[in-house]
Length: 137
Image (cartoon, rainbow, N blue to C red; front, side, top):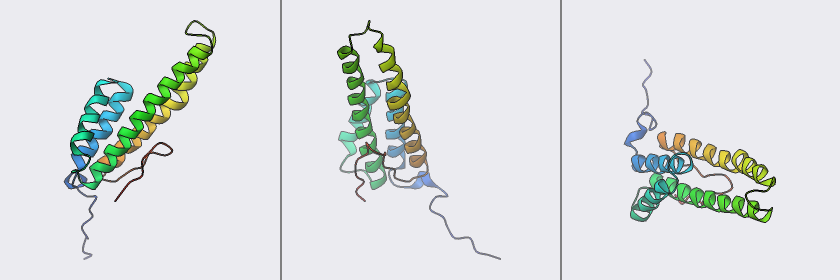
């Protein structure tokens, strides 16, 4: 009979900071898809409350989601500036910019969040490519 070694991934919900990491990633996705602004405010509240005292897993996911949310806002403002500079919202270029923004930027940010949520649910850290903050462990 072979003895089974305990695997720390067997029960990821018992990892320190698991709930906070999942909440951060969920709020990030909610901010992008369902309730922008409201979910960002809740995410910022979590970050301000737990950024120094949370376990490493939660701190890493909080840092990634706050940075990702800020980048999402910057990209959205940039898309609106591009629309205004190309002739305003009545110009023919408006839909080109809108479609390019949603297909490239917004979809990429949602993919980062989905991968981040999957990693949080498995009690693993994740650094968002390009936009993520350095993870201090």
